[in-house]
Amino acid sequence: MIKQIFGTDGIRGKANQYPLDIDTCVKLTKAINIKFLKNKKEPTILIGKDTRVSGDIFEHIIAAVFSSLGSNVKLMGVVPTPAVSILTKKWNADLGIMISASHNPYYDNGIKIFNSEGFKLKDNEELELENIIFNQTYEDNNQNFGTIEYIHEEAEQAYYDNIIQSFNFDKNQIKDKKVIIDSANGALSNIAGKIFKFFGFNVINLFNNPNGININENCGATHPDILSSLVLKHRADFGIAFDGDGDRVLLCDEKGQLFNGDEILSILLIDGNYTEVVSTIMSNFGFEKYLEKKNIKLTKTNVGDRYVSEYIKNSKANIGGETSGHIIIKSHAPTGDGLFSGLKAIQIILKNRGKFSEYHMFELYPTISKNVKVKDKSIINSLNNIIQNYQNQLGNNGRLIVRPSGTEPLIRISAEGKNIDELKDIVNKIEETILKCQL
Image 1 (tube, rainbow, N blue to C red):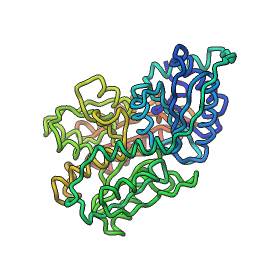
Image 2: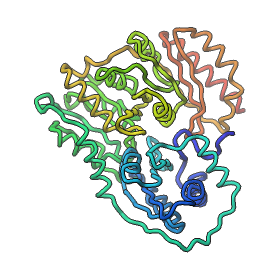
Image 3: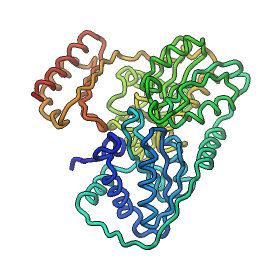
Image 4: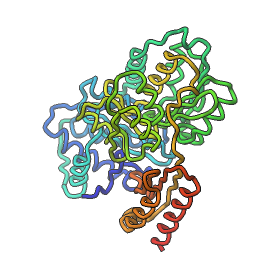
């Protein structure tokens, strides 16, 4: 079955428009109650949010409905997504909810759901929720009301402490190290700079003044060129950027050269004896070739950090992630934690000494990507033969991926190979074909 409202990472869309309208939000909350909480006595729900202006609306709606159905709701306020995942398990809550559209613009929002172990829902569970939303009649006669409690300071401090206690930096290694921090005016705005200062770094803290509408706006992990230019401008030793909800991270060396998720994974592999890495079909071809030389198995999943997390949970693999900067470290959390992953990579580099520019472990294959806006994403089904023909053209020296976005009305085209002109030609021709199919 094809999901109707759930995408790659929960439900996402423009705030106050279907499926992120008030009515659907209420139905979703009731469906969650039926699916996961109906037989539990006074269940506990944690709710976090990022800094976008519509967060309050969905926070209050979801909290009110859960409370009216007998749950005790704890409002975490603005916290990064990993805080919800980690603390849901640590505090023995029954469910965690994160209200965020991650790297999307402020006018979007979304709902991510975590089970009691801190894992995102599986596809079959999301399909069951949709079935309840669209096909079940709700009985609103409950008289056992729950409570709503604000715990922002407690939640933020608990996440802060979790990070601090996970690292023991050598003060001599970080002495006078200057870092640019780009918090994307998002969920890490009040936390990231404090943590780097605690460890002793010389911090230049930027894009940490959210106003509800500037989240991800020309900043953060989706605008890495900004981080690169700032590192050069301030002559910093390195830079780090997060996305709006803090589950993604990118690094930058002193020369302004970026480390994407694949490269961060290659740094993390320095410290440990790894035999398997989990990534997605979007991992760079150069990373794949690098792992082959290291005799490390690469397992690929569908796009989405939850698929990486799910595979790691049920295997002997301990680490994985996405090119976009979602990094899953099994011993830490079942979801991406940009701050933790970034600090871990930084710690490894500093421990092994040298400059950050010396830790580009492999050569990235050139990639040409393009997003094509469509009315109906199912149009991709008519492109199979064309896609296969172009893949055959690239052969073993390249890769072509054409897929529907899980969160936006887009077809995403990505081509990797050694001949950049050939890649541009292929991507442009596929775009032309998609546009013609819509006429």
